[in-house]
Length: 165
Image 1 (cartoon, rainbow, N blue to C red):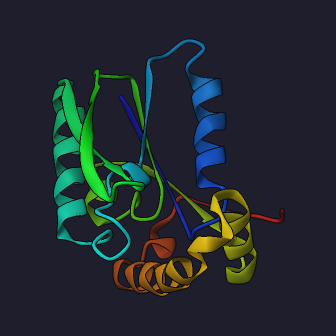
Image 2: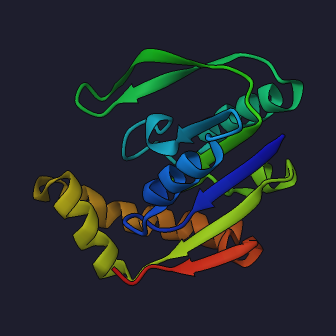
């Protein structure tokens, strides 16, 4: 089994890279992609011990090739209001801010770090998700930067990719 983590600042292209990996690898292997956006507890409680605990559950299921079910956050209702079950897969891809944290690296993940200039990343997110979230995104950039610094995520990356678009 292979574990891949794709991390980096908002707007860097993590979801796009995960989709490319999925398309490439799923031709002849079972692949599951887990998006951190589905696991965050909203804007203010996203990168905390609860996310790390959820990642620990995912990693345990990954190691034991077990089916696991995750609660999925609904950004419109601002609540966990659905679940999604995942089958054991040959490749598990975790993508999003926090995907490459220490617990995931310690589980043997190959970590891809995507760089992007902060204002360019912000512009990409606002174009994609709507300009009404600009205030939350500016706060999120501070939160993610503190997380990355405390976790030293970029420093532990196996591959660093700089987004130009």
